[in-house]
Structures are given as C-alpha cells and as structure tokens.
Amino acid sequence: MQASLFENTQSPQQCQKHQLGESTITEYPFAFTEQLAKSYLELLISNIDWQQDRLRIAGKEIPVPRLQCWMGDKASDYSYSGLRLKPQPWQPPVLDIRSKVEEIVGLTFNSALLNFYRNGQDSVAWHADDEIELGCSPIIVSVSIGAERIFELKPKQSLKRQKYQILLKSGSILIMGNTLQNNYLHQLPKVKGLNEPRVNLTFRNIV
Image 1: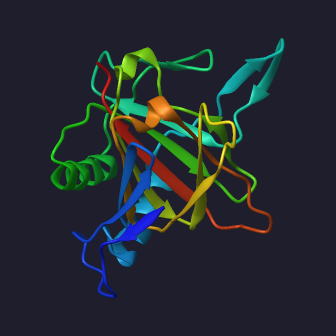
Image 2: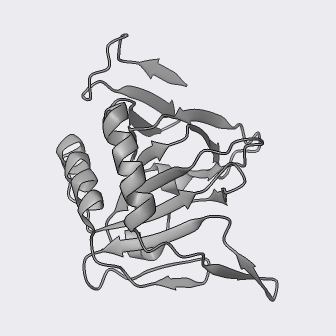
C-alpha cells in the first residue's frame, strides 16, 4: 500500500505516497514542526467556538462523538447527515495553517471542517466526503494536530472490503486525491485508554 519517498530526515517537503487502487493519498508527515503543532493545538482548543452537533438517526437525536466547527468564506454553507452548517469567520491560527496547506498543495481552499477529538472516545464513523457542495471529485486536505490516531479506509464497492490504515502524526498533512471520495470510505475509530486531545482540520472547496 505504501511507497515511502522520504528518508530519516524530517523535511516539511518530504512526502509518502499511499496507492489505493486508482486513488492516491499523499502524506507529508513533517509539514509542521512538533513545537509549532503543539502551539497550534493550544490555540485551536482555546480560541475556536467548538460545538457538539446532534444527528437524527432512526427518529432519535444523537450527539456527534466529537466537537466541531465549520469555518470558511461567506456563503460556503455545508450539509451532511442532515446537518446544515453555516461558516464561522476564519480565525488566525486556521488561516496560518491554510496558508501552509495551499503552499504545499498548490491549490486554494474556501472552507474547512475542524474536528476536536477530546480523547480516544471521540471518533468519526465510516463515511465519504462526497456531498454535492464539494463537486464531483473533490480534493480534501487533512491536517492533524495533537495525539496520533489511526485513520482507516475501505473501498465502497469491493466485496472483500479490505481495510487500510495510516497513522496520522501530529503536524502531518494528508492529501486525499480527486477520486478517493468516490471510491473509498474512511473513519477515525475510538482508541481505548487515550487521554490526549487531537484537532483535525480538513480543507475543502464549496463549489
């Protein structure tokens, strides 16, 4: 699954490719230094207006098992799983991170979904970011800050449903290529005994 393109040094420009069928994930494990990632984590936890949204499933309202914030340009409303999210204005730490992402990827982004996993009991279930607002083949860039967590993927259609795992390091950037959301589901499962927080920022474009 993985073809490593970096050695033991930790340059922000060094990357690692994960090939999943016709879809490609590009990982920059050292995009942000450990010290900078730690600083961002403190700023994001303290300064973002985190919300715990509620989903209606089978007639019952269930709290989302994490805290969230939808941030972006004006008119970049976003809907998923019955939720309608209005964007909060961009905040300085998120703008700084977005600038680095855009420098590496060579694209611009008008919105971001921030998830705050307070500990290992916070999670996100299997899904694909394939909502109509994102276009037909979206490129989504994920930034991990804080505790290391396992990111899992599996094909939507394959009968074998083989799972792939990537360990997301603090300060890493993961670029999910433009066919991944069409072909794969992904999740962040719970982790027993983990008490460290993690913030994930996924930059995207509302079209």
